[in-house]
Amino acid sequence: MTDVSYQVFARKYRPRTFKDVLGQDHVVRTLCNAIEQKRLAHAYLFVGPRGTGKTSTARIFAKALNCSGGPRVDFDPDEDVCLEIAEGRSLDVLEIDGASNRGIDNIRDLRDNVQFTPTRGQYRIIYIDEVHMLTKESFNALLKTLEEPPAHVMFIFATTEPHKILPTILSRCQRFDLRPIPAEIIANHLVNIAAQEGVTLSLPAAFAIARVADGGMRDAQSMLDQLVSFCGNNIDEQDVNDIFGVTSRETVARALAYILDRQLPSLLHLVHELSEAGRDMGQLLSEVMGAVRELLISKVAPQEASFSLPEEWRATLSELLARTPADKIVRLMEVLSGTEEHMRWSTNKRLHLEMGLIQAVHSLAEANISDIIRALNGAPLPETPIATVPLAAVPAPVVPAAAPAPQPVAPPPATVAEPPAPAALAPQEMPAGLEPIDDEPPSFVLNPDLEDTPAPDPDDLADEALYAAGAAPAGALTPESWEALLAAMREASPLHAGSVGSTLFISDDDGLVTLAIHPEDTDTRDALLGEPLTELLAELAPRFCGHRVTLRLVVDDSVPPPVVEPPPSPAPLPEPAPRPAAKPKAAEKKPAAPARPTAPPSLRPTMEEFYQDPLIELALKEFHATLIK
Image (cartoon, rainbow, N blue to C red; front, side, top):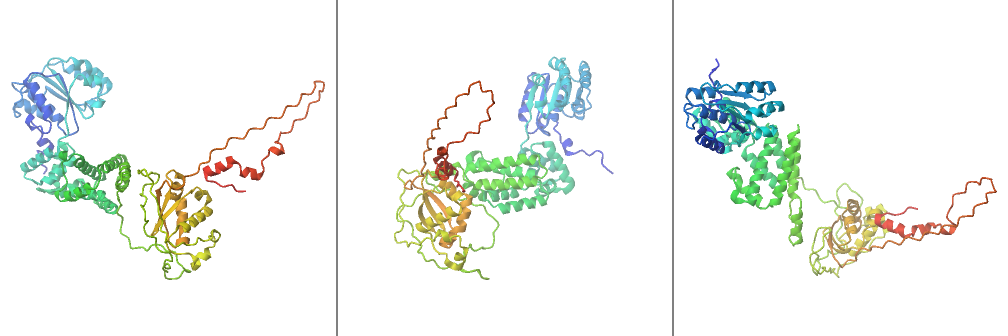
């Protein structure tokens, strides 16, 4: 048989006096001072999130006003008048739901009823909950009474959305903003409730409930009531995680460590496990963002930091935090905030969470303006690789020296000596398009003992059988073989390689070819680093050195600058031929339609003159194009 006298925790442990109100000291102190100093207003507005004590504070305030000998702060909550107010039976305290009594007729009835004097107390109190639900007409009907009510009438309003209330109503009320209750206060109160009920509630479990309640005491009490029904008299943190889909602090710390360490596969695997376990993806992202905030605060203002992460993870996170700049963490928070906005309106939250985490990890590996400034000052760009799934060792691609065979054939030994490091000062490696900061350009000295490798005839580049038969040389590139390779690239792709200007070959270090270009030669830089020439270089380079190469560009003022031809002056237009004299009017015969005038043969350009025209040549140079006859 069901016990009809059972009350849920949210009602059983509702605050009864001002001392029982938790987390709203600023409101309680103001109301108590107003009662003691007899400075009572005629209209009050309580604003705050759900479960923060708006209705409870209004009832306690009504008890203090209508208690025996009142108004007074130290009233007895067990006397008859106070019990009637707490149970909603008092004739002098009228509680109205603004959502279901929002019409103008309800407000007119209310305006007529407030004229009657109170029966037992000193005030007739009108409490309207969710007052923002009233219509505009209802607000206008209430304005006059609200501004000049009878001396025995007091209005108390409560709402979660004050921006929906008319300004004329707000200006006639004293407003009190109730804040979300801190998690520590909620957790301690839950432990006290559990002790009174004979339930063992661990402190980590209480904090887990408080985090989910998000500042609402009523939500936390309802969750505790549900946990007691599920777990019995022993509740731990894992029970809270299983029932409400909460992510443990250890899991949040592990996810944060994966992000900072750029362990993307492990991070996605963790998300998969949590999703399969029924965890709330939005709650997971919120917990991760809270942890990132704690790390950012500890990075920029250590004296203001407060850690809620487990003790055993703090050393690992501190080490990862030490090598992560603050601007990277700010960028990380921006990416996660954008992900939260996308998840809010999406049905597939896991998809947006995974995409957001991938973008967050990659944002830590991006070079920003601060990194470039540090590079200009001489510091190397930070190496921030992203960890991937370990794969089996794959040998580097090689070009076979003979015809294909069932077994892979190693390349022939090098016939050209490996060039040592340059004897003079090597150029400083810088990002493409940036100039060196020193005044004197670095000089380049090539090794004079380097043997020259004859460049192959470009006409033989189309003969694939020649190189498949083993005629391709092996070894490092030389200045001569690089020029031959560049000529072959220009012949194979004149549209893209035709814009490559002067380059100075520096060295070939195990396939890493260093070239110097003039700082202003942006066309050569863009062409060599573009995708078309990169693919063409990968195809043609093995024919000259037997292996693939990767280009590294440095700037040097000693390299010839790009030649910019001035635009030619336009040719003068030919003078028009004189108009023939008009025939006399005596001739009435209508002349035939004149033929379309054509340029004299002497003014028509020949085909050779057309191809050699300066304007045509300038257009071909600007657009890197060629003419097809």
